[in-house]
Image (cartoon, rainbow, N blue to C red; front, side, top):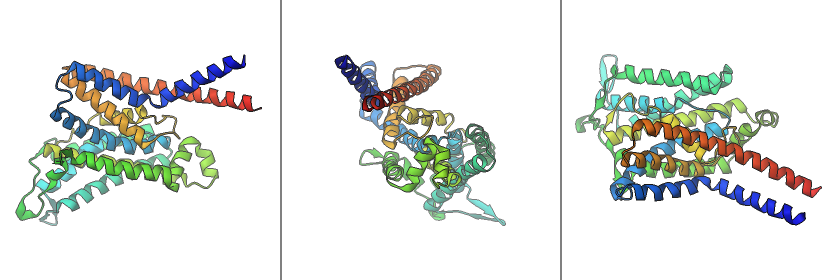
Length: 348
């Protein structure tokens, strides 16, 4: 009887370890599959393209990870990407008209202004959720429409093309964010920097612990002295900042800003986050897992394109991936609870 229990416990432990490493396993399988299905998948140009896309999904996913761990959701990030690109592109091509004069800003200042705008949108999301008790899904869904609307209004639906600036105006150099350094996309370098900072903040600082504790048990966190509303607002602000950074990189890569940029990218961010092991129930998640999840989404997207799969089927497949990830997460939580109960019973 004891031997049977030991085997069962060993099997549960094996399954749990496989579940914890599921994203890396899936990524490995996908790489092997697309390598066979498409001869160009492992070419230098293809890998560079995948790295550029992974950088965008990864940065968005980092902001989304903070939000979901905290027990929320942010559907506005894709629209913020589009609006941020339009803000940056408009400032480069048209400047800022004030009191009959047109002011042109340097690229560092344009980047700062754009990031501040993303942060402000995130703060508004947080305030609506915390001050008016609006569900995160509804608040950020509304903001998604507002941000996309402002992106369209910025140029009446037109594209800001050739956003390279002019030497005489002192606003050149924006395209640097879309370039490669030593064969590595600048976006990927930015992702690495943000990921390291975000991981340290989440695991090594009181703010990170507060994010995790609120997602795990908001009432207990409040009773222990955590400023729940302030933390929630800051989490959405971080998500807005990440989306603004992605908007800047995207516009730089295209050397153009279009109001529809980032459309439905919130789904990629959510998928990367959930695939990476972040629980939709809150309280559990890692930045490293999200980065691997971003690689999975990037490989799926670009791999399917290289195999000639229809864009419509791509949407179906991504939807199935999200559902599958949530189902696996729920299975893992149930198994963890079962193993914890068995451990307590054995110790009695």
